[in-house]
Figure 1 (cartoon, helix red, strand yellow):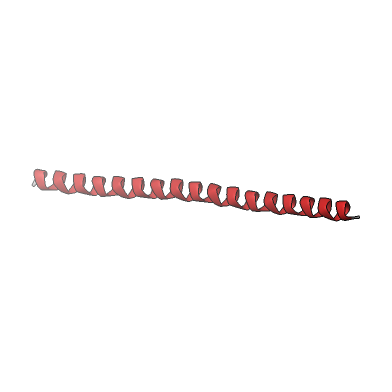
Figure 2 (cartoon, helix red, strand yellow):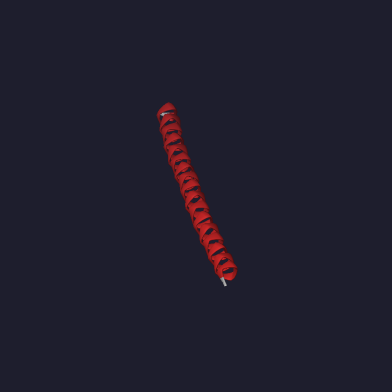
Length: 63
């Protein structure tokens, strides 16, 4: 009887560890996605800033 209880507890612990591991992996994937989106936003902001600076210098040179 004790063997059955121990086995059931082991299976329960394995299931809990699987759930915890799955949640951690999902969080890591979200972090990677958030970093990628953040890098894209930074690139877009830098490009817009560079374009605005270029337009301002072109306008100043033309006048």
